[in-house]
Length: 284
Image (tube, rainbow, N blue to C red; front, top):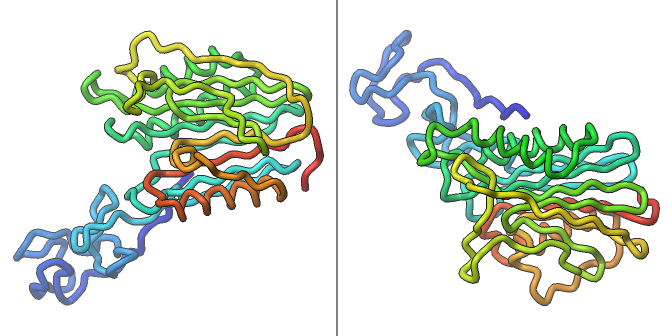
């Protein structure tokens, strides 16, 4: 996925940071050293966006395609990911695809205390979803994703990391794989299908990354007893589900959007990723 490119403009008559006068053709401001002709900030309109995507004037990170994205498959399965209300960027990632009558989804939540957590989640979902769509086992897909995330590290002290949950949905069967605290539920009852790798204080004890030692995925295969929906999500949603009455009607996309709305209206403290897959009945 390619992030949108900020607007480029010619060098201004004054430096956008210190307002010192500059001349046409100047590359840098002689007063403060700012690179003239930098991308324009989407929020304050200053030509002051640095190479990391942050505005040097207002300090805000520029929006990207990952801030909010939706996927809808033929047959109805849908996914929504959103930056939330309190985070500067979306470190969640999701994949949702079909292969030969099988629906595959992977949701990863970047560990906020690790560097470049958004890169970890992105490479994990890309690697694992490709493996699962080729028919590899949940364990094999998890191992490949873990290797890919580990390659991002410069050392065990600079190791991007993410949690992981996958689902492979075939006629009459669902196979889950997970490590960390991203979850899967059965709707509309809201039955939790996974168990968190976390201590009582909430700190996770399993993840993908170069500093993850001896982590193997939990794997569970189940047979749905009737029509319903499989929900796969990050903790940006499930932290707000205690006492929540799940919607009992709507397309998967409508359900995903309603769940996102609930998370945002409840505080939106974290990135939110939601995938809803129908089972046992047709959906448009």
